Image (cartoon, rainbow, N blue to C red; front, side):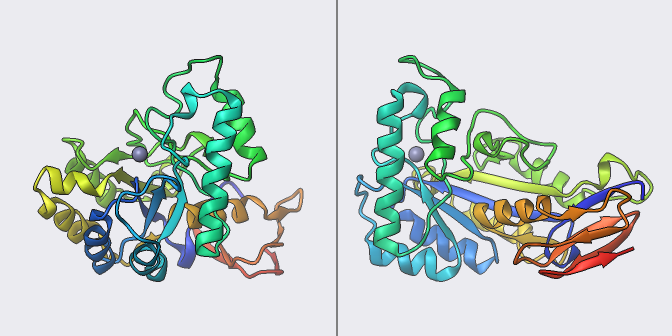
Length: 281
Ligand SMILES: [Zn+2]
């Protein structure tokens, strides 16, 4: 075997995910549009800030449609600017509140405000990452750059999205992603799976009076047979299940100890390994 590459469910090489913040009433219209186009979103909520969205609406427009809800800090305070004690409290309060109100285990997060871009009050990214791991936060979305390589994150607690929807190059990025060929001719780096990850706030479509933008994006990105549409935590869980595969030294045997069926591309052939299965090549 020369190379092996992760493939998403059904052997797909591409995935798309969305991440929208703050839990505002415009999330309902946003959910109508993206759900129609087959996209999946993670909605990042502040447990202690009421912006008009009721728990019933969160259930109806987010959870019942297969979207994820995630931590965005109880009061939307930047982790990089808070002491560790306050950061822990903000994260844990939010996580516990969402879990209790919605009866789901919540493990995802998007950093509120300036997040981890700046450090003040003796804070550092290393300290924040440490307490997030201790608090059971599996991943956290950061901001401040464009991930136009579409590569999966190496550090799940500094998960850089592809772009904000207001990025002037957003349509170019989408075209680049859709045209990206996992080419057999360039069977090295080009064969890694790719992820298009867009973020923003639904109220921006209202403020900017451009709901047609998300309609257009949904029209372009949605309902492709070669794309896996997933929430942030679904991607995290699947990728980490892939990382949990157990290989023999000579790579002729692989055991899947997880509950996921896992797809893998080995020397240009796609295999799937069922839960509990040992595959021999
Ligand atoms: Zn926010």
